[in-house]
Image 1 (cartoon, rainbow, N blue to C red):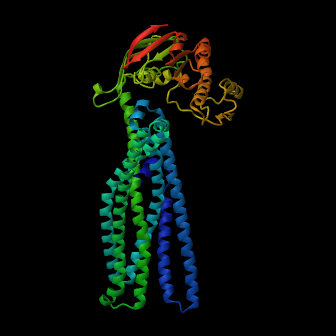
Image 2: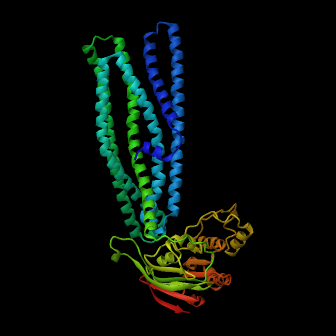
Image 3: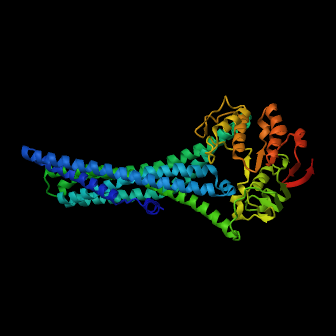
Amino acid sequence: MNLYTLYKRETTIPGTSVVAMAVVSGVANAVLLAIINTASKSSYSAFINQKFFWLFGIALALFLIGKKYALEKATEIAENIIRGMRVRLSDKIRQSELLDLEGLGKSDIYNRITQDTEIISQAALMIINGLQSSVMLFFCILYLAVLSKIALVMTLFSVIIAALVFLHYEKKVIHKIQETKVKENVFLDKIQQIIHGFKELKLSKQKNDHHFQTMEKVAVETEVLKVDTQKKYIIGFLFSQTFFYLLIAAVLFLLPKLDDIKPQLIIQITTSILFIIGPIEVLVNAIPFHTKADVAIARLYSLEESLDTTRREKSKDQPVHPACPPINDFQTIEFNNVYFHYPAKDPANTFSVGPIDFTLQKGEILFLIGGNGSGKSTLLKLITGLYYPVSGELRIDGRQINYQDYPAFRELFSAIFDDFFLFDHLYGMDEIPVEQVQSLLQLMQLENKVEFVDGSFSDINLSTGQRKRLAMIVSLLDDKPICVYDEWAADQDPEFREYFYKQLLDDLKAQGKTLIAVSHDDRYFSDADRVIKMDYGKMTSLDQV
């Protein structure tokens, strides 16, 4: 994968004009050199100087206009490609399965869509600069051929040697860049752990220090890799530059001995070589960007292929059934001999849930209990259709729900998970009356904390209990037949805890809703119609209360 492949695959915007204007700019830059050298020989004539002045102005204008157009158009094409890839990948991510997303790694996905696309954006401008410089370099070498054949041979020899040396080092660097990227992602993941796990780290100095030491170790390893990578570039760059300084020395001290050449011509050749050094430096600086862009492009397409592959494999393994019509309501949802285990090389050593055999009745209040690691969260993901069972069957009102039916099945649920995410906007609920939202804000005692304006909440940076109450408002507005609440009352004060168990659940049940709540509040178990206990991934009891 490279930038040209990316361009051919990702955009229909013509790039011919970019190349054409980069060529015009490069030619104009070379013409500037010829004008400067020629004018320097004709300084005795005011008329000729004026002519060269206007030629210089025209060439400079073409150089600037051509370069400006090429860079602006390249930016437009690059950002068009990046926008398309980001949107397409985001669409595939949102349509992937939760288990697949967890397997790919959320931090790695985020880094690829943000950092890798930014590398491509930067590389596009560097490549256009490099193209313009290569055109100028070509015409400068032609100009050298006119001035002196021996000087041309010297220059070509230096350019070829310098290029070979740099390319030799670049091959070594590609692997280092990939290794650095992986290590940098690990470091960024550690930073995210500090932010998201701040409370847990703050409660244990030993854990906090150990995590920081691990992160510091990764940071040092990342630094070493980056420095080593840049050192290889620097060595190659300095080695190639040395040839040009030696070339200038050869022109000044050796060329007069090899050829009967006038001092004025020596100055012109030296000026030409100095003009060449600039474009060479641009090309040399563009190569690392090009290499990094190739790595970034490969990583982005690798992510997309992973998303596509998991989707294809799931679709391939499932028999084709007629599309499920929208599911707006139900009477019973049956789980028959359902098993689930997390992917692992050795399934025997991974956590499993099952067999799950129970029937969820419309309009009931069901409490789910069990210790940490008992399988409650996994069971909730199975019930809500976020996980697909390894075996067993799911039936709604007697009709079997297949893999293709799961998107329709999930529409039955509104959930506040233990690790819930709170959006600041009511997405998908544009027609909700403001008065209804204001009423719920008052009910949850948030009217002095949060305002609802243009479909958005003014502030979501609240305490955990307040955030859960705001999430409850969203759930109530969502108005789904089944409501799932994972330890919702755990972070509430006694007033709201009592309200949740003694009034809110009953009010929702009276509206015909089905309630599933994870709870450790045993003094409220009598308020449930049923209590299911999970223990080591199995339902160890199914008690009628």
